[in-house]
Amino acid sequence: DHLEAAGHVCILKDASDLESSSEIAKLIEAESLEAAVALHLYRGGRLLQGHGIPFGIIFGGTDLNEDVNHGEKKKVMGKVLEEARFAVAFTESMKEMAQAQWKARQISWAVTCAAAGQPHARGKIYVQSQGIVTGPNSAFNWNTFLHQSGINQSADNLHIFLLVCGLRQVKDPLYLVDAFSEWHREEPNVYMVIVGPEVDPVFTREVGARVKRAAGVRLIREMPQGDLHAALKNCFAVVNSSVSEGMSAAILEAMDLEVPVLARNIPGNAAVVKHEVTGLLFSDPQEFVQLAKRLVSDPALERGIVANGREYVRACHSWQAERCTYQNLIRTLQGSIQD
Image 1 (cartoon, rainbow, N blue to C red):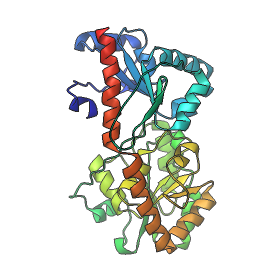
Image 2: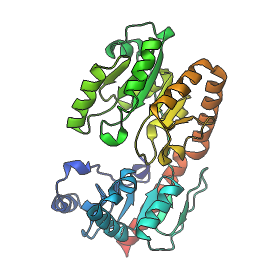
Image 3: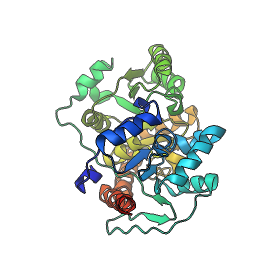
């Protein structure tokens, strides 16, 4: 949307649908592509090497948190970063991790933006947090959602915790299942609903089998974004239990929708959730249950977290600032084309 608003024509391709660099070469020729942006330094970036068109990359999270631990992947990513004209990190800590891994060469580009939350850039790697916009579907029916989730109780008496994630191991959706089930047996009006697309089919089957045996835990498939935002707005709290994150959009969307967040205490989450201020951070399943119970029983805590989270998103995750950054960065690729 940001790039099309500036008059560019954009073609979206899922890296997992492209088996080789030669497919990218054919696409570039067929569509007369002049520039590219890749999300994820390894999965997306490696496909763009050596094609002669200028490109930038956006770090995803697992590229810096997981893939750097694999020697060959790290080597490939280093070459991609060297060829890329710019790289975008969501947080200062992500930028520092990348610079430490590859000692990214310094070049002098300036990005200026009058919008709130101006990004800062030093060298090739720019810091720009994700811009957040939410749009709940007004036709969404919460009671129908609960019924489809197999929860047949009055919505007025329920506390629904929503865990939104793609079903893959790095998101660790099973991390809280046993502890939550034990809590549900004590308090039958608490439920955890896991929502997300099937990313890893084998792992998805494992999650499904485990959830079937778990009291108080439900699993539903991917939802349209408007419906998901409406579900977020109706739930009691949003949960993140990932092993690693770049920057969780679900956490930020929950804040924007004035819903409290409970997140696993990992660097990517701690960068956006300040404990007891904009959300709650837990280090193990038992601490999650303790904090969740506290949130249920302390309306003042809930109100404070919600207000602070909403203010934080407004101040630090402006989509206008994000738009300004990417439109400016794309101009550097246009400069490369003209040169």
